[in-house]
Image 1 (cartoon, rainbow, N blue to C red):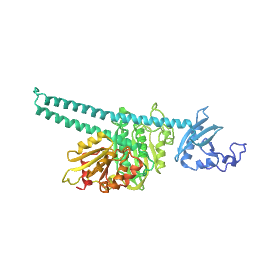
Image 2 (image 1 turned 135 degrees about the horizontal axis):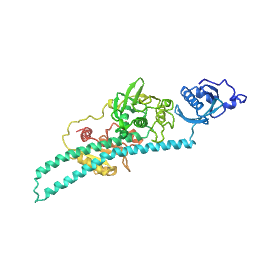
Image 3 (image 1 turned 45 degrees about the horizontal axis):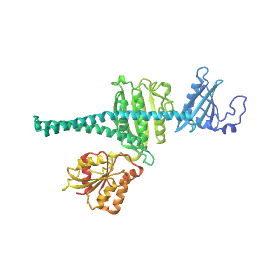
Image 4 (image 1 turned 90 degrees about the horizontal axis):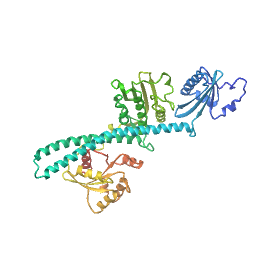
Length: 501
């Protein structure tokens, strides 16, 4: 397209002043069948000055000019540089008249479609999460039931004087089976924990958080979220070499990756699982970090390269419902100052490349470790006050640490204060960060005013669902903190180190 500001009339013989046309609140263009601009008002000239917009409009106009007889009007929604534009083209006497307006909140039909897509995505994600949790949770429940039955049988034999079963052999058999059952339960619960952690990271609010994300961790988390879609469709290859943090929040990056990975999964036929492949790679570039997601699926149609980022473009299989295509991902990446590009060949797959600017920080795995993995053994049993509002978790802590430490439980900060005010001494306080009535932060501040030495021996625990105040506190406190659940050896090591014994 060329600049057409020199043209002074819209139709031959019709006199319209340029000042009137330039005062319109929308772009107005007259284009010939080859995509050449014959006329453009002020806003129209701004649009055609943008290469990406000019290219899209040219393709749109040619498509309208070549439309079948009777189809003289077409509409399309375009996403350009983070803006949502509505383009309408009418074919008239060998030319195409185009009007382009910025979409606003009163576009009810468009908003309703987007909302349906959002709800559909949430529903699909919930179904996938439910499916992934159901199998390991069922295995844990069945194993615990089997263990309970075995304990009942063992107790019956031990309490029955008339029993002829050799108790030592029964005990040996029970212990061996119990070890296997508990190990399998631990594996199942770890799978559930990892899934919940990934989901929490995805849904975490962006407001106020530092815009930086570990792209490798985001890739692994996103792959976990779409595992149900990929498992029976394709093999997944990873080549994660990035070492820098991307200037994007983890939640938004997760949305981008899940959208792109789901798109890849939807282009793969499950009947060809053995040859299907999805490859994810990350690497550092000058001032940026890049993520590439490639698949060998059916690819995009030849005429879809320029529309892949438009709202309502649907790369999914026929009958799978409406789609926002890559437009949401495109908007997130552009808002973060990055770029997203698509290369696709029909029948030979698609490669989507996301490039994001980096921060000066490095990944957490390369930073200084706060707490060493081991500490010298304590010469005596440590006295630990565990503060949490979950009774079952308090009991689990006592069982886990009770063999080597004296553990006292407090259900909430109020009970913990009462224990301290009674004059009981503790070497370490293991305190939950988020509790009703009085949070762990508020409790620590109170202890800091009245018992400053004890306040220096706190270890905080979090389940991950934190307020902004909690996040800022953990970012700035020199005190250690753990994420639930934590391995027994690591928790003991941290407590012994904090105690100073």
